Length: 138
Length: 151
Image 1 (cartoon, helix red, strand yellow):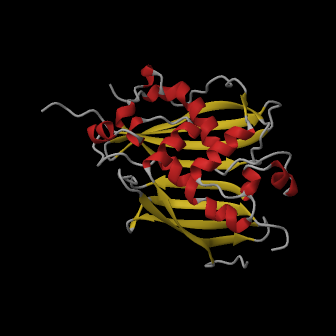
Image 2 (cartoon, helix red, strand yellow):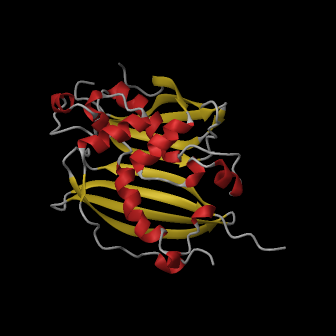
């Protein structure tokens, strides 16, 4: 794999349904009812249940982990939550992530990977950037 | 009542130790679709040079949100959770988190600012091991909508 600016590292479609959100709530301890209760979600002005922003952040970075081959290679990772991901019932939502090398720092042995994350064609994360430590042989 | 700006600059006492269990990392990885075997299989993690299974990149949120609750769930802080959306999040890993880690977190309230009618509340969690060596820094910003004025 070549790591140079502009290289597309990975792209993946990830689906999410209500069961996935319940699982994330349990695994993360984030039980905010807007992620599992339509009534509460609508009361606060959402179209219905939405995914945890942190679920989306966690799910999309897996393409970077897979490309690097090491979950510990991500040394810095930030996102802005620009738009919620509504999760219908029945059914599922699909999130598309495209990861591209945005910058490299050969001296530090790191690269910045920029993630473009969309749902139904609209950006759901802004300024989604992961700084990764590159294996020594690259 | 809105968000109380007088909390800015406040630091909280270190949390009790959070022990990272293999099963917890596996459950978090399953929920977020982590595909790398080093998150669930000790042998795969050790093949990469880790002592034990490795946390997925956003796992520290579990540790951080528990610490953040000291502030955001304090009624005096004025953060009404029915008016909150998560605005941004950042993890800086000083080293990967592994199963068996014993983590202690110090929560800092960094800023409360106003933008476009929202209160933006930024916290910083400094996560260290139980010997005090830094493990991760987690910055989180919540956007709090003002209460509607009755018309």
